[in-house]
Image (cartoon, rainbow, N blue to C red; front, side):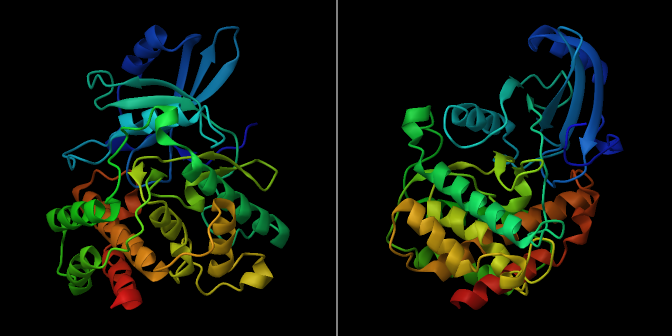
Amino acid sequence: MPTYASTVPVMERHRFDVASLDRYLRAKLAGYRGGLDVRQFDSGHSNPTFFLSAEMEGGKRQDFVLRKKPPGKLVASAHQVDREFRVISALAATDVPVAPAHLLCADDSVIGQMFYIMSCVEGRILVDPSMPDQTPAERTAIFDSMNDVLARLHKVVPAKVGLGDYGRSGQYIARQVSRWTKQYAELKTENIPAMDKLAAFLPANIPAEDPTTIVHGDYRLGNLIVHPTEPRIVAVLDWELSTLGHPLCDLAYNCIGYHLKDPPHGFARADFRKLGLPTEEEYVAAYCRRMGRDRIDHWNYYVAFSLFRLAAIAQGVYRRGLAGNSSNPDSVKMSKSPRERAELAWSLVG
């Protein structure tokens, strides 16, 4: 049996017309013969993600993943699954590991929302950075592979893979602060003074260094597939927030776990030596070596910016949970997350 992330029966609020999808795949997916089985991955808070198994030409069954927009009223700039499809299609020709993309459907009449289909990559999703089932040596190797894949992504020249217009060049931080400030204001459920302070501080103190690369936007262990038996990354998932942007923001976001105390995402209290995990300084130094850098100035700023984004994202997740259209039922438990992340961010720069 292949090794995949866990699935559950399709949740009531995310059910769609499977017969309609079957008809569409018969017409559009090469080799598709029917026998469609659909389940839902039980992780994720944004774009609902489904496991598909189907009979293909020759009688063998093949596994796929379907990602679609969530139901309900959506923020205009969010849930752009067509951008996800575009970036993984483009990166297939690089050394950045991604799932092979097959087709994009922009016709809402098929299952209710835009969706795309990609191959299901065998492997493990290790959300908890302490990785209790791994040895210290395996944890070291997995973190190093995560670091290496991020550096590979940032070395890709966007124009050479058809992504020269995937976003704007330069001023990424200013645009992101503006975007997330507006989105937070639209979705806020309480006043958080730290968010207001950050919204004023961050645009007034942007570091001068302003490179542009492809950025993932949500690069963390839980969005990576680890080989079924080996300690290496075989695919990067969830490209919803990807764009052209500042690579050091991507790296800082990847390091947020070093500042958060609570598992599964936070591991600030971890015994790094015992677990075989690099310290934040060691992890950043490894990235610098791979990118040919001596150091990173203004590191706390980039981490604070990333926590500000995460606070705004958490606010959106919580609000969708209240509205009942989140892909994860635990979203309503995130009421404290925006405040905690904002206050942590302000403690780094205030």
